[in-house]
Image (cartoon, rainbow, N blue to C red; front, side, top):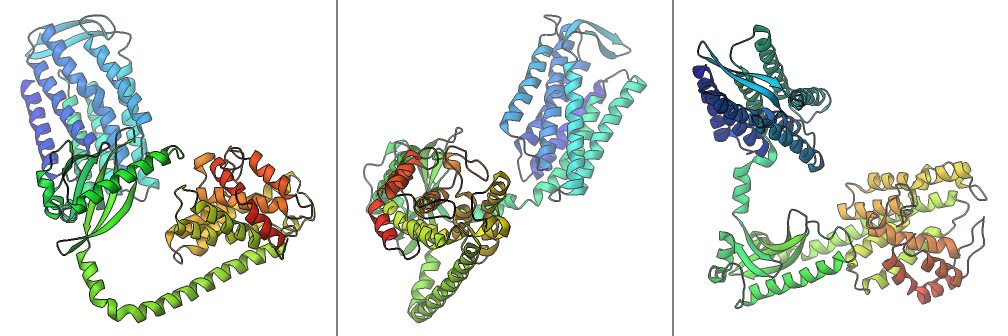
Length: 577
């Protein structure tokens, strides 16, 4: 008995040593699982060396550490391999349940919760602990079988349906589960005088670790040699929220040697012009984040922006700021990243004088191509509008309203850039493109829609989002594709969640769609339709003001109301009303 368990301890140490040497991923659940397996097997060895009931109970408690946590860790590992995501809201309660079971085990010998009684027996050199089970003992086998069954089911489903997993590796894991289960059944049938669970553990772990090794080895994001080589070329400086210096890597110290004299945990009082400019920029960015936090609920998500370009010691660097977020996703500091782009700049310097003419020609052709694209898209939008009996000139007017509105937004200190607003203006003509998928009988109806017709008309937003994505992807920059798609897809959403197609609320609605919503509704109000007369400017702006915070973004609506003089002038002189 002692020899058998000693062999199990030795084999489990060998399996873990092999994992430690070969594992390129260093998965937490895999490593903890192996350590607990070793601990559990040591518990079996101690049990075989017990001389009284107290020692046997203590060894049994060590064994149960593995018995309680190995199944759940194995289940987590299988989910990881099968790309089956378990969030913390699921994992933490499961771990708590296993911990509660382990607590009941640890009370054995002190109360009757797990064992009512236990008797220590030595028979022909075999140690046995004869137990009468208590009311909480049933929890252990239930959870054990549940995790093994769940792991088996998830493995089979992944093998059948998930093309991103390796079937051979999953097959090996399934076989190991089955073999471990058969070994456990064999022990029960043949009534061995000693517990053979350690051998089941080794079968299970060996059948899992070997395929995991192959899976981890070829995972693209685990090519650490390549990653390490690239990181060594990048400098990093870290500050906390108080702008105290928290350290840097060797590359950053090479770029700015003065960092070697800075004290970690202190504010840098004496800095050269470059470092001083960087610290001031971090301070400005921190204040900007604080302002955004008051407006946007997702302001604590990890952010990064390009800060500046610097020339230091004949080398050029692109500098970015990254936020450092804690476990609660709150910003607690900043990392400054230095990317050496010297080669790029030198190539640019060497070739710039030869490329001026070429650049000019390329820009001209690019502008022509863009003009053609925009006219084509506008033509499609106008074609759709020509089918709609109620919205003549709507596309042109809403685009002009967005242009007027964007000028106010740019000067409203709300964080909008000219580049972003230009993309919103370019996107505006496509906001109703999805109406091409609406039946003519509905689109050309001269009157209000009934409930079924309105339901079908609402589909145009989702259809439009997909059409814009299909038309622009691989033709335009990703940023423009996203903005145009959002404008088409979400411009009928309301900030109180009563819009369509998805009932999004507040900041769930992309800001470009919230901008478009104001322009779209305003034009609908002040324009004559087949089912209504045009509203007066007083009534239209009153409706916009009253709908701020329910239909419209409150901050955006406030800025939109300041556009009244420009909008009245525009509509009074507009050819198509």
